[in-house]
Amino acid sequence: MKKANLFLRNLFPLVLLLIAVASCDFLKGGDSLYFCEKYIPATDDCEGKSTKYTTGTLTVMVKLSKPIGETDVNINITDLSSGKVVETIPFTVTADMDYIYFDNVAFEQPGKYKVSLLKKDNTVVVSNEIEII
Image 1 (cartoon, rainbow, N blue to C red):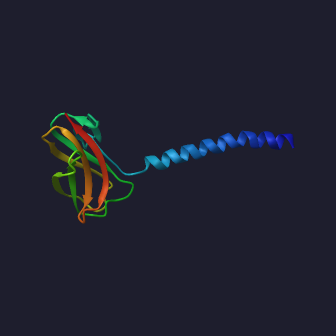
Image 2 (image 1 turned 30 degrees about the vertical axis):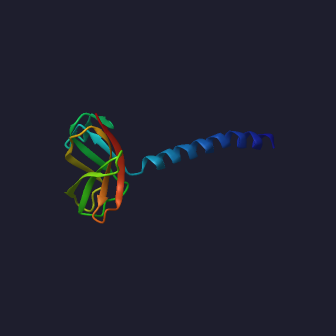
Image 3 (image 1 turned 60 degrees about the vertical axis):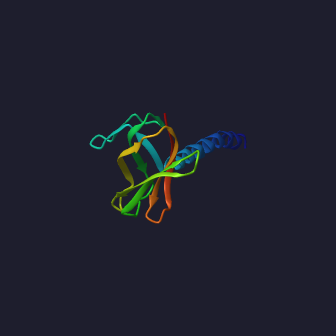
């Protein structure tokens, strides 16, 4: 009986640890949108990954948990303070893509923006915020 209690007492922390690790892996598997000052496709190198930049052009990176399932998408830039759309930029992709980069997205004015990847019907796929100083 004592051995059984000792076994269960040692097993419980192990089970909790496994649940925690599995939860972290599940959360990491979600969709993400992030930014690079420069992206090098040949090496998959995202230089200058951040959410705060000076004015200029950036690469918008999108990593999805499943293929996009669309060929026509938009990158939508919305001013966070006013809620107004600053720009919507159309892009053509292939439906089987789940890792996509959008080159030369211009941020010409300082401010805080919400950047979203939209499907053709304007459904938001993924978003993130960026600050231009």
